[in-house]
Each structure stands twice: as C-alpha cells, then as structure tokens.
Length: 166
Image (cartoon, rainbow, N blue to C red; front, side):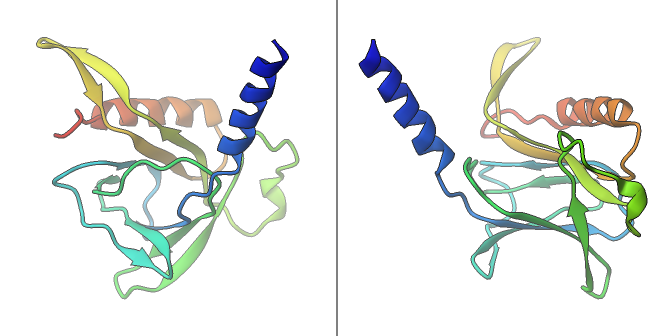
C-alpha cells in the first residue's frame, strides 16, 4: 500500500511541475464578456508565437479557433486589449479564489477572470454521443456579479462547443 501512495504522490508532483507554453492573448479593445479559445482544430488559425509564447488573437465574436494543441501545466498568461493600430494595454488577471482581492483600490475596472482550461468532453445530439474539443475560456469585464457572469460564460462555452476534428 505504501508503494501505491508513493507512486501516486510522484505522479502528482510530476504533473504539477510540468511546464506549458506561456501565452499572450490579444483581445479587441472594448470587448467585454466571455471568450473561448478552441484548440486542436485542423481548420483553425495557424500557430503563431511571439518571443517564445503562444499568441492568441481573439476575434470580435470572442471565439478563436486554432491549431494549437491543448497543453496543461505551469504557465504564465498575459492578456492585452489591442486597438486597430496595434497598441496594447495590459489587462490584469484575477484569481477568483484569492480572498484578498480588493478591486476598489485599483484604477482599473476591467479584468480577466473565471479562466478555465477544459479538456476533451462529450456531448450528444440527435445523432448520438460525440467528443468535444478542448478549450480555454475566460471572462473579461468588471469584477462583480460573479455568479451571473459564470452562468453567462457557461452558456457561451456550450453554444460554441465544437465537435472534435470539426
């Protein structure tokens, strides 16, 4: 039994230390609401890197379909509003589980939060069960009404779910 626990602990530690590509996510200036990055799509946007980091360019509709594969591990993600001339303005990411957050003490009023990395899933329709593609989802906007925004984000995820290899 001790061997089982040691193997399990080794597996957990190994997974926790896995390094994933850092990311830069560009969001159209003024966009608010949920957005998704749908991964592993043969007909998706080409993979683009900037300074060794994955570059995700979110379109106006909030749905990026990309050829990048799903990747899980330790990473640093940066988010920026970008205007039509390419000027970037960094958007702060907030961890909703951090109970020390006080957004009233900052000049910013727009944040990225509710970040989710979703692996392969399943769905069903009139033809039966199908596999869904992995995706990354976040919400951008004012940091309030989290339950309402989480529900809005969940609906957005389901609406934009893609069948694997679609």
